[in-house]
Image 1 (cartoon, rainbow, N blue to C red):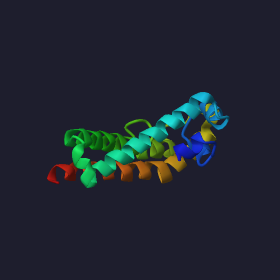
Image 2 (image 1 turned 120 degrees about the vertical axis):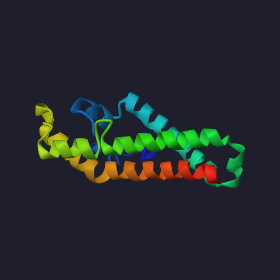
Image 3 (image 1 turned 135 degrees about the vertical axis):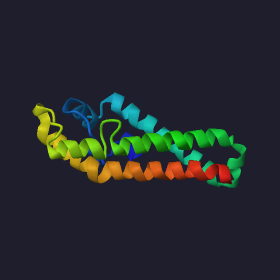
Length: 143
């Protein structure tokens, strides 16, 4: 998705959980955001290579400790993001939607809309993705 956005697509760009001023910069294709999309697309390619190195025979040439460390770090980060340790996630979104944590007054409706998207799409995605990385890290030493 970030690769497509770097090339100009707007797939789900309006559902990124950003404050309004940052959101406008994202949607107007600010050079900083375009560059960040390219960096994230490159990181995804590296992630694909690391994931394949964990399961393919040619991956034996890659130091196992490196693959194991990357798998655990990515897994922990993604699960923490899904749960809400990093601000967004199941906990933060639920608290916001339940009214326990009030949204910013100047963009309350937008914050609630983004919390719904995060709760139903992004957080489950990060939880699944992080779980896959953790399982990879857990089973890697056994191979």
